[in-house]
Amino acid sequence: MNFSRGTLTIAALAGAASLALAPTATAATTYQITVIPPIGTVRANNLVTLGALVTPTPTGTDGSTPVELELTDPSGDVTARSIPLTLGAGTAAIRTHEAGRYTAVFTFAPPNGEPTEATAQFDVVASSGLGS
Image (tube, rainbow, N blue to C red):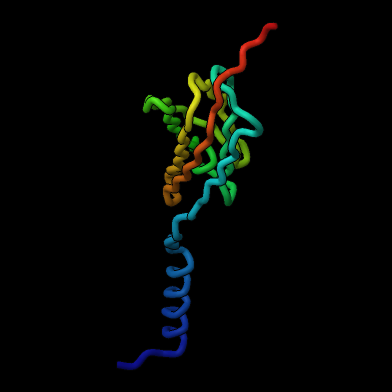
């Protein structure tokens, strides 16, 4: 079989063009969650702010995916919240009802990235009464 130089050049260019236009397989982004714990002494029957920072900053549909928070109080009750992200960070205000150790589990499961999870614990002390 004999092919002319022009035919081989056209075939090579067509092959290169089809490879260039083919969809590329990209690896899912691996995210990390940094938990921002409460600052200072946390007292029962107060609001506490918990935060999450997702890195690298999610973009596209990943950026509109909230972080899911499950907070377990000392008696074992679980409170679930969704934390919307703005530029990869978000906060949630949670009421602490009793003294003891609380466990917060943050989960980020974006559609185009690898799911990730982070856990933090913090202690809550009994409320001090006001008055004389």
